[in-house]
Length: 597
Ligand code: SER
Image (cartoon, rainbow, N blue to C red; front, side):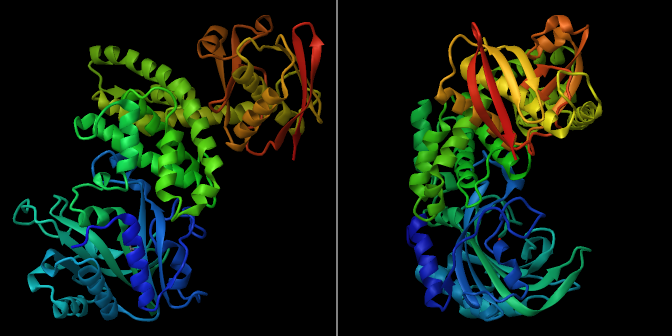
């Protein structure tokens, strides 16, 4: 059997299918084009769905490629030696051309001749049949005729041997899966391909696409039958190299080595550390691919951006657990780029966006991570005293809202201490917050605004963003001294001892525009002034407020005592531009800025 690397395997696979009359096509973006039912491309066939359903592909009827894929269902399992969020998949397709028997011949030839896997090491599964589709005697007979022993051919039910659709609807069909027997002892008399004990590794799946699943859950037989196959690269390489885990292969080792040198710990010596190392290496690889995709996604609170945010924040937390000091993700991203820049040139093209996205998100979360963890840990002894093992929803919400902890991260943190979280309570707190924010936006508050048009409301929110951005850039000595808003512009006076430099103004502008781009929710709550202060809200005009104050929070970016009104979300505010920075009086600067549509 050949001991080959991922890069070599990529070449061998593509060359083999090209030699069999296939055209190599480019893999697609990780963000699916026509499938709103999933966030990411989950399989090689996913971008090809329209062609499997009948559209003519410009490259012909026989295609092959390698495709980047992300499956998010497994994020929380990442950390064990087997799960990955990102993986690459080789595939080949017949769009109404050859079918089952020819495909099985291709698979057998590639596995035994090209990769040199001894035939006795292979086991295969085929579909046992149901009301809709007959038992797959054709595939079983074909495998047997090629030399697979009868007792290495398993008939399995739909749960095991039916693939697809990729989202909720679309093409699907029975499949035949190929497994490599590692030679390890069987875990029991029922151990067979599909068992997760580690004896059998699935390496390839031939899907006989003959059906289309409809919205109502029914299956319709397609006139034109297609072949779709998929081979997971990382897993196959691990098998061929005799490794027990994908993390032991050259696909991950350079990333793991880089983490080792950052934290001074060795992979393989302590299970907890190993887990953190695996989490970081998987998550940083996936984050690089999401940021560096053709459709480059930045961290946010929704959709793919939220998955990215979770991955980055979880990696940062595990980095701290390992004792890594300072920002480390962009350094690891360099290693990922060295590994993948060639097969995925879009990563190199989007290098700045990748680094920028990682640095910003890591910085942002590092600021609150320690505080949030401290807050969390302070509470544990009280809960233990009360014999409680569940973290209240309100607390989980506070960690989310104030410290930027994705709920999944709090769940993991809780589990590490033997606690669970009240997810329902979190959802209630979250909903309540949203409702309050909407109610707040509807109310007509008295304020220093010239009117309450959409334009002035947006500029008012922009003033809060500007205020927060100035404090982040220049320091917390910055405080509001005056604000004047018309429908055209905002004017903001603030304490600062020197002119603000061009570079500083640029940073401030970028920070505000980034906050706008992230479409942050603006929420409102009523608190006592003391509570507001405790929560870190900026409150300057103390005497103007009575006992109770309204506090406006813009995502993780700003919290300020204010009478409103504000936009509900920052997303549609437009582009923030500073037009002028000048002196207002001694020690007070003035900025004029606009929102361009
Ligand atoms: N679509 C199948 C899979 O993902 C084969 O490519 O396994």
